Length: 40
Image 1: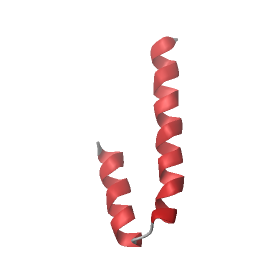
Image 2: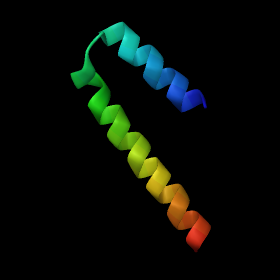
Image 3: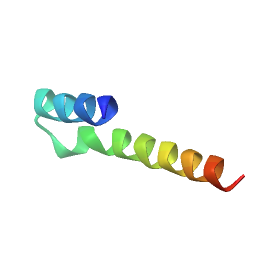
């Protein structure tokens, strides 16, 4: 997806694992929101 591509690009630019953690959290929250939408 677009978001995953952006995350990958951001990760390459920063060249640091620490920098990716906040974006992983955002993706997790987004997935959770989508899951709740499916349930409701």
